[in-house]
Amino acid sequence: MRAEKLVEIIGSDFYTGVPDSQLKALCNYLMNRYGIDPGHHIIAANEGNCTALAAGYYLATGKIPVVYMQNSGEGNIINPAASLLSDRVYAIPVVFIVGWRGEPGVHDEPQHVYQGEVTIKLLEDMDIATFVIGKDTTDDEASEKMGEFRHILALGKSVAFVIRKGGISYDEKAVYGNGNTMIREDVIKHILAASGRDPIISTTGKASRELFEARAANNQPHKYDFLTVGSMGHSSSIALGIALSKPRRKIWCIDGDGALLMHMGAMAVIGANSPSNLIHVVINNEAHETVGGMPTAAGKADIAAVARACGYPYTAKVNSYEDLDRELETVKSNNQLSFIEVECSIGARDDLGRPTTSTHDNKAGFMDYLKEL
Image (tube, rainbow, N blue to C red; front, side, top):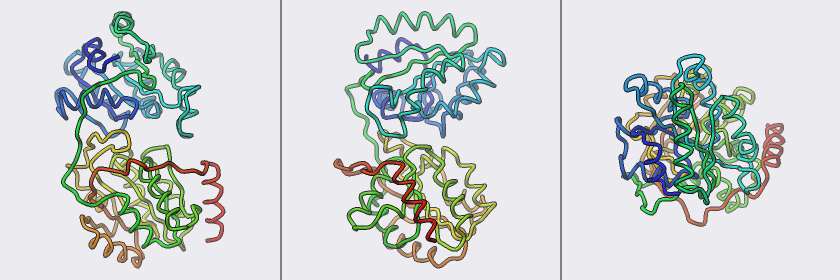
């Protein structure tokens, strides 16, 4: 069904969420209709953030808000859904729109498979009534279900539309960009040249895919890298755990702005522990590029300043390859926790592939390599 028709059927004028490729049609429609508008549409840091924001909107207006997300974000909404929205607590109704990655029987990436199996069950366990929208769902069917949902919402309970692959469509495109000139894939190549044989933990999405292909192009083994293909926002914490356990070797984390924002509290924990061997590089293109390019709040945040405030003793921000190379050499010789924010453009190769090794092989090879250090 059409994204604009689904919005019409739901009848809400406030949307907040974390973008998802399965919901790209909806995200593009909302961006073209509203952009980022505090009164109508906000892209939040993580799905729990969205849910609490939606609750605030309901408390202030009495109107039903909508929260959209990939099903991987269900874990982030469990706490606010159970302890805030629930009709046993404050009875705050929300309409969720959930992109169903890893639906059983539909091929998907390994990080989505188990999440896809439990998507509906998690929602039902939280007493959230669900309706699945696929390619064959009619407007009348969705409208009829929304009529039933209104009775549930009136009781202070939440509901969810779960969107299958291709379940919603939208003809117009949304164009995303920024004024930066550096290309993420080239930034990663510069990091590889500087890091040598040091272990790298890379964030979710295209960054890990580009890292994998850069290693292959260099005829280097993949054992140096841990690719955080899921668990968005947690690569820096994984890197912290490794750095604290391997204090004699430099540990690099290649992070993204959307991932960093999703669990920014990790920066305070990293700063408090301050491992002298951890180098945290955030490639900031101000966008959720892997799922379509929708903007993050990082375009208006001074991430390097946040790192300083969290206790990172060395921070830098760069917007040229010359400055990047200089800072990479500096942090290599620094015996202190270091942070580099790299201002980057939006874009990737159309033929960018995916890792050809399994997640289990990646883990095993990486762990074997760490034993050598």
